[in-house]
Image (cartoon, rainbow, N blue to C red):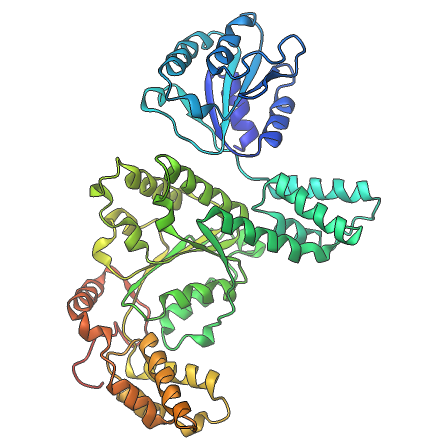
Length: 499
């Protein structure tokens, strides 16, 4: 069921106390008035008190307890919804809490519902059983299209059916008020509304995502050709390239759920996330999981719900979670009053039950830090182990970087020798060797050579040697059949001698 149907059912079932976490007061209140027209809607806020009915204007002004007492003024048989804006700020008060629990018992026998609206959810433990939280989704495509058509009609313009879908998709993930604001900006700028305003909407969306401080809108220009090796992983991605299309839905294919990439640092896991978004032509959202746990008590859970809501509104999209092991290590023993456990529980439940086309790409370096629940089947479609590149893959990685840097003179470099002389080097370390070789050549006012790269490599100690215990544990975990190898040549075991 959708939000309207869910809310209608709860109202008819006489749920006494509802909490809807949202900042879209105007849009929600419009839905409430339209949902059950026979119900009177009373709206209260701390500054103005009750609004609307002339006999009640100002009642409960600056007095939240009096705002609750207003319920008892209404006739027993009167049907009503009482909307209390930002009321969660007062829930810790013992008088407010007690009054709400008393009203919860009273309203079970009356056709009235108290509805609290606030952007953040922070419900005290003594009210947890009395209050039901209802998620309010961002505007759906049909609602956005209706709004855009209305704006076009107000301007007296002809609505261009071709390309309208692109503008609607660009607006997904924004609140209705934001959509009106950014399209109003376009109208003020050009005295008209056009399909070319998509770029303006996308710029607004990037700004919104930055303001959440949780999700970043990451540009993805990397292609499969930028990945050296990892042929098994590439084949897996190519087979699912059309899985988000309407043709795939008609075929009966479910949306791909996600991918967990586990392996040594610098082996191309983050690069793969960017390549997936570009290859599938989907927006890439990067989640900073660490920021979920920042701020006041209760904000982490609210931010998690906000992240899920935005990602689903922007779907189809790729949600990239970098170094997920650092975010959820030691979930059970973190000593944060259970916040991390609740956030983790919300997150993995969403991953298991989501039906929206949000493809989750998570990367991890330390498999020991990951909770076992995250590795269970159903969370991800596949778990790939990204090991150290083999000699063949190192040659491919050198080819990728040198083709980008010296496309005209790449034949001057002995790629096979470079690959042979750099055992245990990751892709990131190979790139760093080339950069160091460029410094050598530049300082001597000449182009860099194969010998310069080998000199740089001889001076570098790769991570596979400095963190050999961690690398060996990862290899053993992958070799036990816990993950699929991303490489066609095997798990990429570290070598004491060149391979």
